[in-house]
Every structure is written in structure tokens, then in C-alpha cells.
Length: 507
Image 1 (tube, helix red, strand yellow):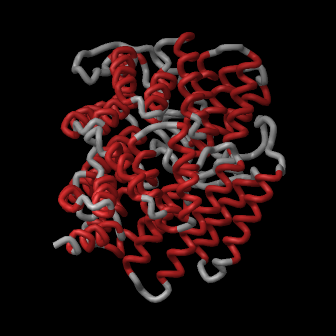
Image 2 (cartoon, rainbow, N blue to C red):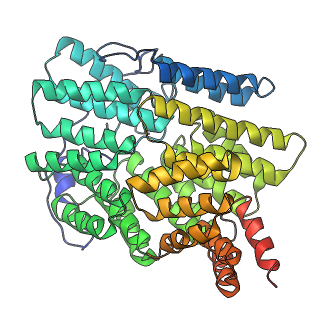
């Protein structure tokens, strides 16, 4: 999440997670304007439009082949069209019709505070206009670069990453070592899953400005994603001392959750929600609380928090996705399908695509198997698009392909990701990829490592239970399968049923 851009009085009232009031420097106010017909994605002041390199051409062809499979499904064809448009660098107007920039509701799934208080597309258009008139404004270029990072993330449009990189390079060419651009490079590297690079850029930005909220936040993110959890906890405490507020609170909470301290994570998120001022902040934090509740199997609380998020921003896709998962787990499969279809129609990212495919499979109506396969095919198209734009998509590949694609490709991707970083998520992905390839003896140490920090994930417990059984550890297998279902009995549309079946088979 980015700087919230509140005024001096609001910043002075921020309270750290330790409960002590600490003033912090204010962030510059964003540039906003009414959206134009391009939704802020026109060429204008952007730098270095994309070229048709071999990888990008291959990705376009991949998307085209997927579209040919879908002539019977208008909604899914629209999702494929979104990917194809993103590759060409054309105008993407999603979210641009949500009202003028003065409207308080954030556009799409915008990370609150990046360009706080307005429409992201409109803000990008305003920045482009400004930079035509003031091309030597290094701060403007840095802000534009960060805005492109957010546009890529919120709309599933990785083609914005090259534009973000060029804008940030332009800023640094005008003002070498300016902390805004360095922090933007950190955010871009993290978005591309280059977490070593993200850490390096964040550290460089913090040497210039120890109070950079974006750099402090990106540093925590990088350490978490590198599996350096003790260092991440220390970084979160440092960030809390320097710049307490919603971005730091939410990261602090996640570090605690990864260590199994759900109570502290919930307390900090509730504190963040009480400190939220903008609708974007409210939507973001409420969604995080909903996800935390869902992880613990509390679907009623999850739905309540998602409702609060959607009341703040009715177009906030993570909240809609969270509501879909909670509805599915609670037995409202029809509502879950509707919600997840709405999510993938606007942002066809691997997680929601796989979830929707599994919802179709679990429903089992006429044509649902084919519908599910179309979702999984689109995951492959997104991965091709992401890689063509410099995103490391190995974890996405491993997670999706292990259950719904090329199992050997899943293992290659999981090994490659483990070579780069040792997190609980990569350990789990590698364990499961080894399992589906019949290599359970190799998988077991990784499954155990994935559950070693205390992180309360029913999926991790399910995977470990299956692998323990496969390696002859009957008691441990039963314990972990039962634990997964006790924690979150609806953790997956297909996985939960398989966990029950595996558990019953040991009786």
C-alpha cells in the first residue's frame, strides 16, 4: 500500500501499534482530474511504448488460442480480450466510468493512498497532461511510474510495468537518487516478484529518506516474500516507529499472522480500521480482516467485513473475491459463482480464475467441466502475458499447474521459485508439486517446513496431511487432515472435499 496523503493534523493523530501517538511527515497530495475517454491509459506523457518482441508476440498468440476455445462463452471471451488489449498497450477504460475524480470512492481495487481520494485512471491522465507541460518534473515522473504499477496490479495488466520502469528511470535521470523514484522502483520490483531487487531499492530510498512510507512498506514486503520473517518483524517495528498508519499496520499484522499470532494480527487490523480515513483505506483493511476471519473458518465475520469493505467501495475487487470465498465455504455456491465471475470479468488473475474453475467443477452442472477448463486455460494466458512483461510468474505456475495443468511444468516452476526464495508459500508449492509428481519422500520436508512457523493455513495442513499419509505416517496424516478441516472446513471448493475423503479413507 502507498502513502495515504492525509493532512498534517491527521498524520499527527496516527497511533502506532504500540498505542503511542507519534507524528509523521506528510505525503504530497495527489494530482487528480476527471477521467478522459481513454481512462488514463493513452500515450500522452508516457515514455517508451511497448514493442512487439518475440515473447510478447508469443503471448498474444497464446491468448488468441485461448479465445478460440471460448466462442461459446461471452464473459470469458471478454476476459481474454482484456489480456490482449493489455499486450498492445491500448487504452483500458475499466473503472473510468465510476465517476469524477472528486468522488470519494476508490477506483477498482486500488491500493489505498497511492493517489488517494480519486480515480486512478483520471489521476494518470492528469499526470500525463502535467508532464507534457513540465517534462523535467522528476516527482511527477516518479508518481506516474508508481501509478502505472498500481494500474497493472489492480487491473491484471502487466503491460504497464515496462511503462512504469521507463517513467521511474526518467525521474532518476532528472534527479539521481531521489527517494520517490527509488521507492517506486522498489514497488515495481516487488510487483514483478523480484524481491531481492525490491529490497535493494527500498534500502536505497531509505538512505535518502528514512521516513518514506512507500519504501518502508516495500522493505517489509520484500523481507516477507524472501522468507526472512524475523527481519520482516524488525522492519515492521521500525516502520511503525517512523511512519505509523494503515500501510504499516496491515503489514505488521500480516507478519504476525505468518508467525501464527492471529490474535495480535486481528488487534492490529482492527486498530488500522479505526484509523482509516478514506474509503479506500476502509475497504482495504476491512477486506484484510475478512480474509483473516475466513482463514480461521469464521465465515459470518468474513462476510460482515467484506460487506463493510464493499459499502466503502462497491467496486473493490478483493472484497468481492473475499465474499465469494466466504459464500462458497458457507454453502452459497450460486452467490459465490456470481461474485467470482464478476471478479474475473474485470481482473482475470490466476487466483480468482482457479477458484472460479473449481467452483464450476464442484457445482457439476451441464457444461461446468468445460467452463472450468476455460478458466484454467486463461491462467496459462495470463502467465504468458506476465512473463512477457518482466514478471516472475513461477509461483503462479506451480500453484495452478499442480492441480489443473502440466504437473512437470509445475515442478520446474516450484523448484525455480524455491531457488530464489524460501517462504512458507514456496515451500508448500514445492511440496505439492513434488507430491503430484509422485515424489512424496522429497516432498515431506518441504510440507513440514511450510507449517513450521505456525501460519494457520488449512491448505498447507491439507497438503501436509496428504503427503504424510503417502509416506506412511498414518497418525500424522490423519492429524493434519483433521486439523485442516477443523480450522477452515470450506478452505477450497475441491480441496476440502478431497481432504474429507482422504481422512475417511484412513478410518
